[in-house]
Image 1 (cartoon, rainbow over the protein chains, first blue to last red):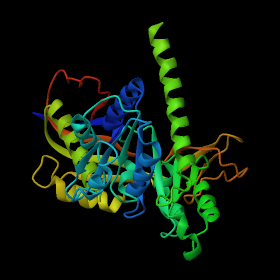
Image 2 (cartoon, rainbow over the protein chains, first blue to last red; image 1 turned 180 degrees about the vertical axis):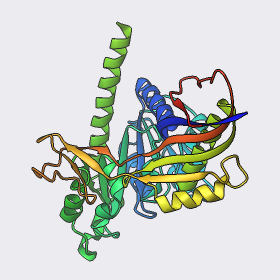
Image 3 (spheres, helix red, strand yellow; image 1 turned 120 degrees about the horizontal axis):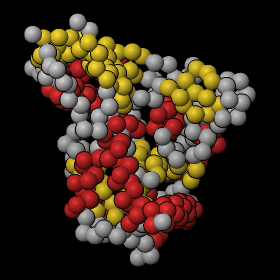
Length: 232
Length: 134
């Protein structure tokens, strides 16, 4: 004897993943690790930005990087001279998922990093829909891509909290207006902090690193208050 | 094409629900997709047809409701529909707006054929209601 039954679920398809990401983010906060998810088109300069960031800080910050790539570990090889790096080869997937990040974390030599950078797959579409337990999502937009990109990829810019405009040394040679890019992005996300940089010369990197330090401090203040509250 | 990975997790969820409720077949699956969900309804449907082949969901009706992008203005409290991805209040032009609908890909309900059972077990931590149709 069978019956027809309607089961009402009414739940986000990624609800389980979002819960896990929130748990992991909270664990990172308690450890003092500030997690940054770097997203961009391919070739926008994510690896160069991380090289410049690691060079600027030298031994003054404990940093680790998880690098996502469809194939090859070329980006990981570039970063290895500066920081501990784990390669997450997706074998064709167009975005990183939390399970890959968790696997990469287990392979890192330590746990007490001040900053963990996740270099996502170069793609302005799919990574926008996946929470990797980051505290901060940063979209890197290079001057060679055109200043009209924010409006064309609204979800990515809406879900980011900061925008790095890279390859600013090329501004005299390309039709790109920093102001136009900022205006376009602010129609999608008004609270986007913007950092024009040139990773090869180091221009703008000090301001970017200062912003990361401030953001990590804010996370620690919140985590500290949370622990006090739990302690009471 | 990350629709593939999302639809794969949707199918797993539906099959788990069906099993928990002593289901013998899945008749219909209803989902809701918003413009800011990051998924394309057409690609979701294609992914469903490819991935459901050979599973308990094969042959079931897959209903997609496309919901509009709606927001509330934090300054003038107006609630309105956004015609495009320009996140500005249509009333007072403020950019302090909160999205209230349209950024999710949700599973609304699943209709199953099930063996008649006196007590339907509910999954741990999972909240859903059942409704007898026939």
